[in-house]
Image (cartoon, rainbow, N blue to C red; front, side, top):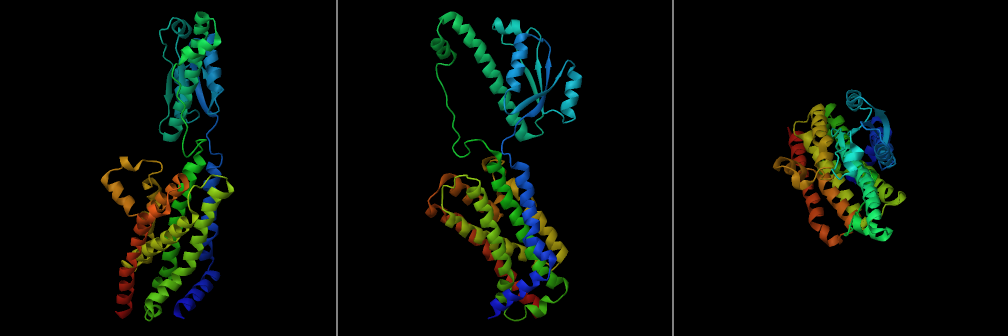
Length: 377
């Protein structure tokens, strides 16, 4: 059978090509290892900040200790010069600058609400958000302790003093990331983003070597469709396996709860791999230019992470960003992964998204026609 023979030939080609072997094994695994190593801790801790204490009182030192006691922040520098403190932030030696004003104690005790100024480096958006939250929490906690002492003098009873601090209590519990762990948040999207890049590259390399050596006309002259499928099949299986293993790694070995159906995700992985293989071939047959098709593949896949709606909300994207997102199979895959992993959505609700992935397979029609046109010319 032509399809099986082509599959076996391609497996032999992989065995004899270090480049192809690296593209389906070492290169993606090293990329995964790098991403996992960077974000493995999951929670940002002990980020250095600098404090300028203009009062140096017992109360201001207590506030500094309160800030330093947070798991997120570390008061790495205490300076008198605002200029020197700002230089540390500019040199990226500290992520934030906290300024405690003069008369801090007097204004606090007389209820004049002294202003503690925090200058945060928001070039690091995620870091800036976390630092701001930690500082607000530390200052609110310190202010609460002072208010408690004042209330204790007034009410003479601990219970009433605590109640007077906040008559209404608010408990905020995250639904899907209880520990606010950024490993789960980022790595679960970064690994698929890397995965789709390698799928496109290896597909173009596999078919492109025939185009580059001008052997494609003879190779695809007969049984064109069967040979296309047979040549793709080894990489389909390899990258399906990689996709399944990465999914089980995140939601299996690490202990994160997967609420939905793994079967739905395996189908999604298969549809996504084949969709990207078809798109890669479309780039190749658009001009049968090996180098140009690799460039197109890089332009198409490399920025995909930004359009997934993971780090930037979909509802804030402009029309072009939404259009580009719709053109990426990985965006539908991530939609399925989030709905299954976090929400445990009923598989019947995923039919439309799976069908959207299947629609990308239509690119094989122009791919097939272009190959037929080329071999007949």
